Image 1 (cartoon, rainbow, N blue to C red):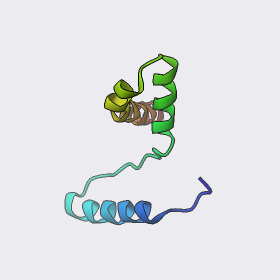
Image 2 (cartoon, helix red, strand yellow):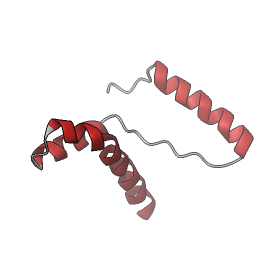
Image 3 (cartoon, rainbow, N blue to C red):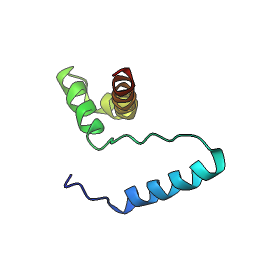
Image 4 (tube, helix red, strand yellow):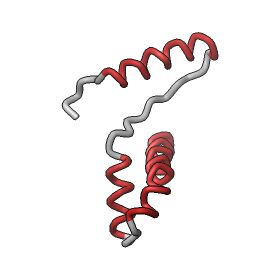
Length: 75
């Protein structure tokens, strides 16, 4: 959260560069570090049991990522 890239981020950036060379498509990166936290908070506020939260948390986090992208391109 201090603005530096960790090892996994470096791997993702390298992969994206290679993918761009092969596919010749624009790749848009999205910061997803806090999406799981936001999803967890939302599910807890909805009073969902932890075992059910565990099953849907990644889907909810992905929804936050997609919504962030859609909001960005709308501007």
